[in-house]
Length: 290
Image 1 (cartoon, rainbow, N blue to C red):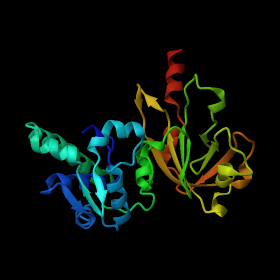
Image 2 (image 1 turned 90 degrees about the horizontal axis):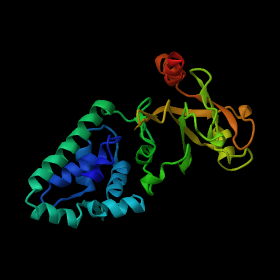
Image 3 (image 1 turned 120 degrees about the vertical axis):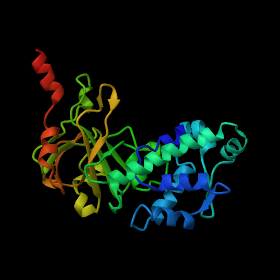
Image 4 (image 1 turned 60 degrees about the vertical axis):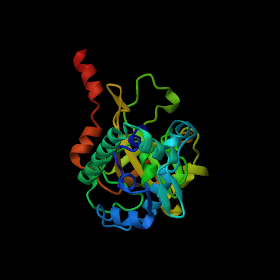
């Protein structure tokens, strides 16, 4: 239950259709062909690549810590057939509380499927499978882009380059007052169509990620921008809002370590979202209290 809960809220339907089918199958097993037909009940797109990746995710694309914690819950995936783990099947068949277990797990699965349907519908959001203005944790784009290594490696940095030519840029607009100056990046919206971004403080313009991002159009790189106002509100981590693809104005790049540059958003921000992003409520509250 803890393992499958790490995938909530759902950003694609595949994992949840797989789990639902496995728990209801006679031998807790299913072929990708069987699962493909189930998934088509929820989406209208060719989901074969996503389906294979979802089977692999449920079978162990995780960090060492997660493997130690959840390893007995991992499925096995061989020859296009996915099966619940032997340990889990044994527990289901011998545990007197298995009926309660089924109810709890199916409730989680049902919640994930219903919420996915309400938030995403049947639409094809392309590749990576990201919905404009939807909220994401830092590691969820790994699932949406079929990342073939540990999902948990998608975290800890404002720039993730694991899925080239797709680059994922995560921004906290308003930093903590006690943040170290070397990582207090001057990121901000200039207009509804332009965003100023500062690269990680080891980036240079002539090579590496700095060069690839500055010249993203000619290099064929896709830059995906995720923004949130605050990292936490009342100690609750906040999701990043996906703002779509951006392209760098190469002539705007100035400085080194970090590089300051201006992005052009392919999708102009809605006025209400723009006004929300440029207003720092925490600062206003402090002013009012004073």
